[in-house]
Length: 252
Image (cartoon, rainbow, N blue to C red; front, side, top):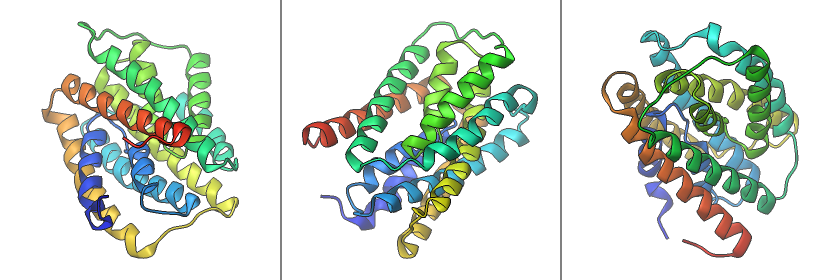
């Protein structure tokens, strides 16, 4: 069993990989925190706070590098925020929660992998209704699963050939930001917002450093196809681990 003292280093690596493709890392934070913390609601709140820290950095970098385009993004955001809020207020058992999260991650990782192994990355625009519907659906799933939702939205947009991979990463980053905040508000209203003050600041520092490096690589330097493929493998592993652990009692 890994000691809890190693969590900041582990979360630094997770934030680096996830932020490089516009994600916050909430899914992996949830999976790892479930090994160390006993308070289910503390696990959800901690993951959302760390998500906000990572994607705030990514969003600012995307804006600075003129990748963020509000005219393209706003329909996804407007429909997702209220549904993420309501989804976060649902009270699920720990087993059901992690099974839903794990299954969703496996599907998302597979979709991401398929997209990034395609030889061409073409793009086309969506209608307003399609953006609103997709944003709302993913926002609700984000609230229920306790993460920002970008890890569900991004593979879907990539498979449907919406925009280019860097624009999708920018949208995923701000999508996670607004829905993580909405989810935190939902947890607070439902009186399920719990944090460990001695642990949270160490994890925040770790993910801020990792997220800064990953967002920089995503914006200006690194090959997104390589990072996307590596992240897809990580997402599938985390999802498979959650399903096996909480559905069948198998720990891998």
